[in-house]
Length: 57
Image (cartoon, rainbow, N blue to C red; front, side, top):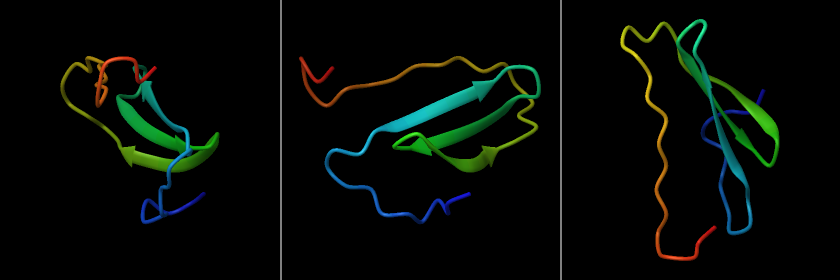
């Protein structure tokens, strides 16, 4: 698994996975799992995302 200190660059694809069974979160960089970022979250998770400007998708 890669470290969360990995450099991110223009063109990288960043993913976020919410595991609702065990209340954990992990991220991916270009499809590679970076490992669990948060685990045993005690509250309900509500996924959302934001964009820098209109048309960024």
